[in-house]
Structures are given as C-alpha cells and as structure tokens.
Image (cartoon, rainbow, N blue to C red; front, top):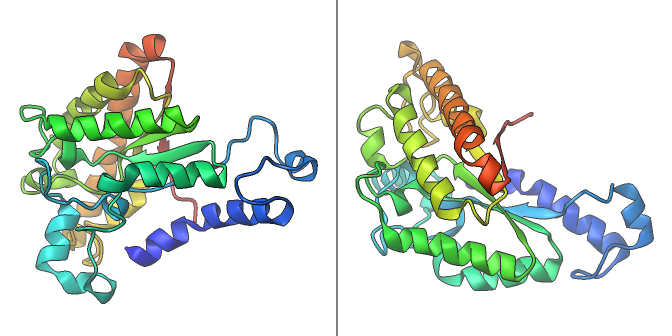
Length: 261
C-alpha cells in the first residue's frame, strides 16, 4: 500500500521539479514554464483519507477495511505499518493547507473517509464531528485560494458493509448512493469537482489478493468481477444523482478516476 502510494505521488514530484527548474517554490510560473502548459492548467496535489488523516478511532469514526486488515493481519503491510496516526492530518489539516499554499498548488484533492462521517456505512447514523472536520478542511482550503477536489471512495470501505459482502454484494450500490447524497448536501455548495471512485482496478484487487484490503482471494468465485460490476453501477448511480439533483444548483462536475498503467 505504501509503495503504491509513493508511486501515485510521482506526478506531484514531477510538478515540483518543474517549479524548481525555473522558479523558487511558492512563486508564480515564469514565462518559459507558462508556455509549456495552457492557461487553464491547474497545479495540484492529492492525498487519500486513510493514508494521511490518522485519528482512526477518534470523534466517532467507525472502523474501515484498512483498519481491520492492518490490525488483524499486520504483516500485510511494509514494516507492519498502518494508518492509525499516519500524517495526523485530522489534527494538522491547517498545517497541511499552509504547505500546499506555500508550494503554490491551486488544487488539493483529498478523499472523504466514508466511515468517519457514517460509522456504520449507512445514513441512519451520521457522525456530525466527522462532517464538521471536512467542512473545516474545505473552508481552510478556500480561505487560502485552493480549490478542493473531493474523492468519495478511495478504497476505505466501512467494515460493517464489508461484513455483508462489501463490493461483491449488489446492495452496496444503494449504500454508496446514500453516502454520496449526504456528501453532496453537506459540502456541495463549496465543492465543484467530485470524484466518485478512485481507480476501480485497485478495489478489485482487494477481492483477489491478500495484500490489499479487504485481503480476500475470491477469484475462484469471480469476486473481483462482481466487484467491478458493482463499482461501475455505483459510479453510474452517483453520477446521475449529481446530474439530476445537484449540478444545476451547485454548478460542479462528477467523474471517475481510472488507472492507466
């Protein structure tokens, strides 16, 4: 997981290198650099909730599949590391935003921890402290002229939903739609870019490999293909939800992120 995280951050490193080639960090692009990219190009960086937030069981957050896997099968990760504390962004988000601003990024992509705002995965139990955390983060970004880009699902399914089959169970689509609806209602007036699901292929691997949460080898049962089917259904359902109920009033866009390598 951590090696994968490092690899997925290479685009961030490349962006920094371009900055360093012509200007000091935090300064505006030079004319030479600006000519290499269109005016509408925006510099950004990205994180995932489990990889940076920490506070895995604080303020009403529920358990997710990475919490469960790292605690019960610690040898599944490099050096038995986990995200219990990670970068502690839950407590240090203002410092993180300050760093993003100092580097000069215009967009910050982060993911919502489904289990932080819905501990059971269902909207019957809403954790208001979790909702407020993301409101605070979004407000801090906007106050520093940084555009928030929000990922709804970055591989950290609430454990109670995994207990009923997770992404192999078709009912997960209904739960995901309800979760997305809450996110749109809670944050949509300030968020213009929504990512429904980050890299479905990686989610599929969690149902084929023991090294990725939930760490189930269900290949003989076709588990990864059921997962793929339900992920596409979930994306489609949430995309249509936003288009029909929120886009006209909130003016944003929703899309999916696919891995291309």
